[in-house]
Amino acid sequence: MGEDFFGPVLPLVYLPESDTVVVVYRLADGFLWERRIGEGGAPTAAVRVSDRPVVQHSVDSQQAGADVVADGEELHVLFIDEASRDLYHTTTATGAWAPSVLVVGGLDAAWVRGAVHLEADGRRVYRYVYDAGSRGGAGMNRFGEKELTAVRD
Image (cartoon, rainbow, N blue to C red; front, side, top):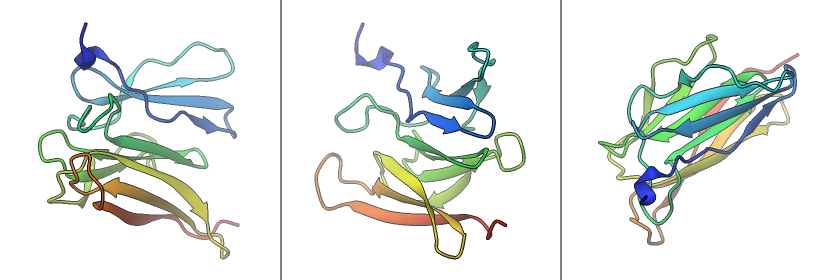
């Protein structure tokens, strides 16, 4: 069994309001999938997250080129399209995974990681760093951010 058989898992996400752990992972078909584990301990049925295959093992590890964060009970995923190597975003803001939206094109990207930051005025911002085409070298890291929510009461 070679490295192509690894099933990469994105960083686990905990949703405190529903006491649920979300597991997002990439299967051999290239798509990202999600399962949730709640109080009962049994995972939910798999739900497809990405609407296009996601890059894996693009530089020097078996990780998927994707990141997942939570804003309350809402999930956000940034991922790198396997064919174009462009950066895309999808979310569960409407209750189900939305069609992906291009964030940055023309990259030849390899990885992305980020976190949600709370601003002093109450806004939440998904700040992330991504590789913009270094192919494992240095000097091609880029920063981006996406405002997630307006000020919450």
